[in-house]
Length: 278
Ligand code: NDP
Image (tube, rainbow, N blue to C red):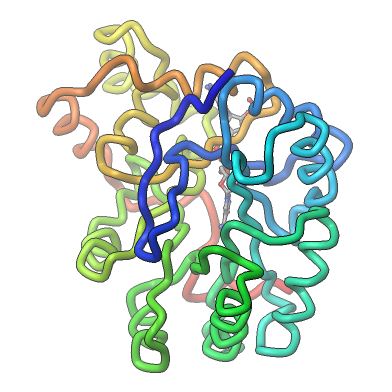
């Protein structure tokens, strides 16, 4: 099965598949199977993190699947406890060794942790890693406008992406506008708001019926049409295939308008201004 997702070009010229496979909270022992299912379904982009504890299994699944290295886009993230120049350099080496790769596609600062005030030094390490060719693209995650502005005042390298919580209930309009103005791609984490009761929404069910798709597919299609990169996660093979089968229909202006009306600002994850778990 070839790649089932179109690609987006980042501000550094690197291409990234618009649909990636997330593995947050996938136990290490289940990760090989989950990633294999995803690759079988046509995903060519996997999003992990040091703190997820499954980098090794992600690397093994990709190797065992037998694709050439440049056919799979791999992202991992620098954890809060590893912030600062020296720590970040060491953390990168550890992650690369766990993944069993000789270079990474995308490395992200996982959270800004403003009270630690170390992300400027961490970013310097990222610039160094990119300059050495050990990572193709560097970016951030959970950065608010103030944190992005701070980086802008201290570095000439604009993050290629900002990976943020983003779904119809938290559309992040102001932050997305900032990204567009500065050439930063938006990656959506918890793109379906972690599923569950959110998928019982009557408006979304109506759209799903109209298009003969599932509610998850309607939400993911909404992201795609907005230009977001999405990282849905599932341990179920059928859902992995469902979540990437979103390129054979389109939402019209009225559909998009009715999804826009769902915004409440509620988060399913932590607030980046205060989150600093180690
Ligand atoms: P998602 O919005 O991807 O939702 C995942 C949940 O939805 C799982 O419980 C899954 O259950 C269920 N699900 C998946 N597909 C379907 C479907 N088609 N129908 C019904 N239910 C479905 O949430 P995540 O929080 O995992 O976010 C996705 C990814 O984003 C993460 O895996 C991670 O890579 C990244 N992330 C990044 C963060 C950051 O700080 N940078 C923070 C959080 C996430 P099941 O497995 O049983 O199918």
